[in-house]
Image 1 (cartoon, rainbow, N blue to C red):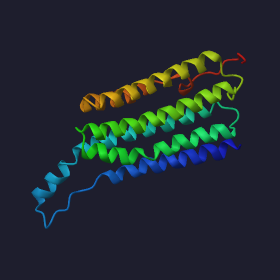
Image 2 (cartoon, helix red, strand yellow):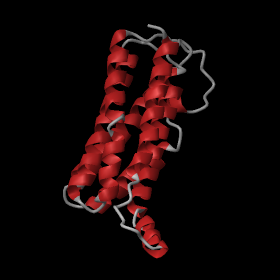
Image 3 (cartoon, helix red, strand yellow):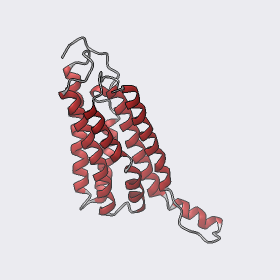
Image 4 (cartoon, rainbow, N blue to C red):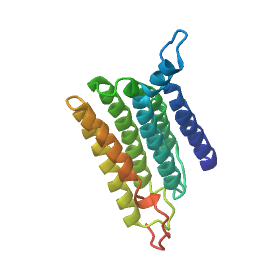
Length: 203
């Protein structure tokens, strides 16, 4: 399948999802408020701002990782498209989970929902990556060490997301901190995400 169209469609969905995050900012209905009342209502949206910043970072890093991964991929087959569509389907749920988390940041239900959505994204991303590895879809110049490092890095992220989701059932604020920790973790390039010089080794 045409890799250019595949990447362009994915970029569009990531952009759409990141744009929808702004819809999470909703002021409560105020009847002829004073300037002071409006200011307090705006300040009351600080949990939504934190949730927005977290999710913007999550989707932004996801887009960057997706781009970095597929610059090293030679071919895109139907199963790759299938896993990618599932990844994108989960990604567009992030804005809804973000709004819920921003509105109820200390509730187990909201932090658990957020974790389920992010864990689902990570699951489909890892399954897509494993399919690419099994089918040897990477360019011949990409060495096995780079691929192995990439797989380990994303598996670790998936484990932390799943763990944070379970923690959300009893300690919502700790779970929120773990979601932030994954963002920090992925700020450091992982294998295919780094600006590597492709090795001459062959598969």
